[in-house]
Image (cartoon, rainbow, N blue to C red; front, side):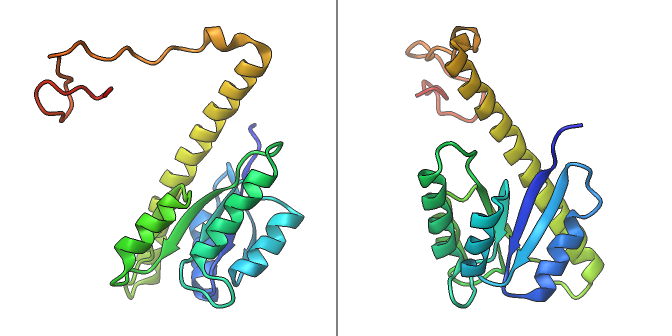
Length: 186
């Protein structure tokens, strides 16, 4: 069996820390290694036992989510021998939500999930479960592929990796939603 993906939950709300932990419980490939009530505490835990992925609230006291994300990226840069820690931002919808989401993605967040605001806790947990499991498993797949590429480069097996497709000839169109004459391989 493959090693479990270790998840750290950073959120100032004990309710949402518990909801996220509950949403991820019971998965054979996922282990929640702990909660943190703010970004500063989350960074302490990261230094003690680096997780594979962090779920991080945006609005928190002491150190907000964007500051925490930047600090995690600095940690990743300072530890090139370790796999990068991924971050999925989890926040409630606010009027500045779109700007925060764009900033988080620009700062290196893997993805973003909106906290549910319904009254039914079972529905909220089910929603978070669906959203987070898709993003966590996609992160795991990308991380695995990156590790395979890195290993292939280190062992000289890079020639065995598939080459990216060639650019389309001028005037060719791809079958996606590109404009006529435009290729997805611009």
